[in-house]
Length: 220
Image 1 (spheres, one colour):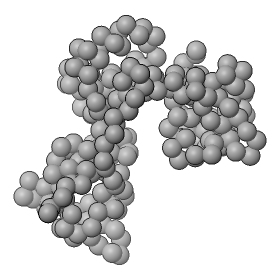
Image 2 (spheres, helix red, strand yellow; image 1 turned 135 degrees about the vertical axis):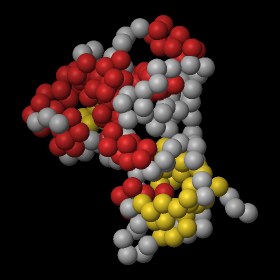
Image 3 (spheres, helix red, strand yellow; image 1 turned 90 degrees about the vertical axis):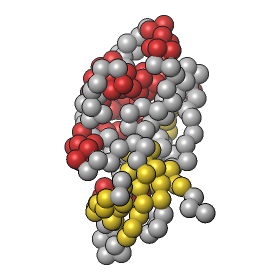
């Protein structure tokens, strides 16, 4: 497996959540920031290795073998992110690019010992689930902040947008995983919200609210 092939498998895995019937060549080209012709060539290579299945007019999907490899790449990526934040004191907006390099390390023994050293974490610094050695993801009840109504309350458990710019925005507004958030007001005109955290009020845009995950808290 080349680094490029592994990156394609990981990207297809993530895109399959959005494109259930199959990931189009154009969607994959946009994700990989490359030409559609290059994607077509790579799909052919991956298909020859029985890592993907391609159907005309439907797109490409991972085979069972391809899915297994993609999950293990994601497992390594998220374990390394957790390690970098928890053990080396990196900020959560700094670790993605470094983990992109470390995720291609081939040693299964190293990853198993890293998992044990970290005491088998279930979620990475951005709230995404870390699959176990068998490829199983832990479930967590969550929904987008923008879907909550006035008076609702929840715990911040993740982000949809993990770009450095958005994470830095959250840091500036002191929005972190584990924070309790109450929706005080929801503006019908533009979807902006007034939140309450630590007895302080904060106004956020609809864009921000669509990129934050909360675990609902029952107020009954």
